[in-house]
Length: 600
Image (tube, rainbow, N blue to C red; front, side, top):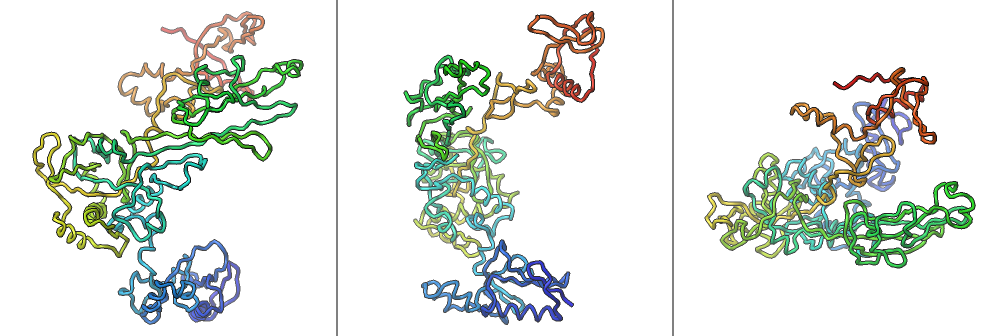
């Protein structure tokens, strides 16, 4: 007997699971039970599972019966003209929705000419087997699967114009491409998904080497193209602060802090503030400059004494809003409002105009990603007989091992589309084929391979090999070197371990770890480690008699051993982290003693 489950609970038994399955599907198709009910027979467990719960992703398929799809040409025409809707087709039993489990029982044909007697369903369109982002990739059937995945992932990171009203919005972070363009080679879904919000630019791409500066996936960019506005973008970040109110009538104050405030910064960082303590729009600010001047009452009211608090003389703290370390730009917009508690809220948007530079990341829709390795003036770039120079030179080594044939087809189709003045359809499985593209190129007077004779920009000599050149859609990604570059000499340390802080935002140090230590030792420079690992070096005094760390009494200006009164004290240096370890051991009732040796 076959067990029947409804949403995971046993409903009963069935003698003939195939018959039960057929009857339930007929009822669903005729509308007796809901369209969203899924019926699945698990052969390995001999179970019929009926699912009606929420959270199941369903996808539409055309029903196939006796080797014939139920969707007719007349219905397709009516659908195009808007006389019938998808819902009408569902009610007529032409389409049905399947979830992931029920798909296991289905045999789905990709297209009408593939349908056989064995098929149970047919795809509405073969391109919908790709996801939302993957459907933006052109000619994906000519690529390896992982490259389509990479391309889909990076389509989401491409800079464009995410919203028309970006200048009014206060997003935490936003990137807007200055001159976004529609691709010359696009797909069916591009208009629907991205529409008037393009995510890249059409650039003339040449596949060639250039003095080895595009080795390891780097790309070479035309400096004159950058000067004309290619791949320029604006980066925006929102800063915010609140003037909070505390008990006892204490509150934060917005304004230019007085010099006697605790934690007062350098005078020059306050120069951008207006009289009200807030920087005005279009003010140029740099890293660590103050955007909103603010002072707060002391955290612990004991510090100033009760009388001073009543008189308003208690030490106030400097708690101004500053530009993040490593960022700069202009104040774009300021908003002064109130929170739900009635506290003053100030939001400030900063913008920075970003011009492509060495290290900025670019990618195509085929997962061919790389950073700028060099920018070259147009006069030194290779050129065609028509005088066309590439915007980007991509290494030829990027293609063979990754098998992104679609990248080559896109360059050819881009050239054909640009010359005929019309977009080329590169939708998955039904597109303007590479044979059609080759014919188009030949008709337009180009070689069908997309290659052209090019001339050396430095010497003017004809190049030995023909070079593939044509427009391709390039995305500027949000990973820009300006957000990542980091170095430090001296800087802040953590309170607990006295070691340098971590991370770019905290102006942190660059960690010299275990593996880097081995490099120093391998180079015979092991004494350098003494200096490298001595960042948190602390002077202590140790009792010669018992090895305990001496106590320093600053009020009496004396030093003594906690165990012996007479013990002589010796000075030494240990890492502060080791001192911390010994103190933690003491908290667990474990005493440690130090035995010092004379330096030889």
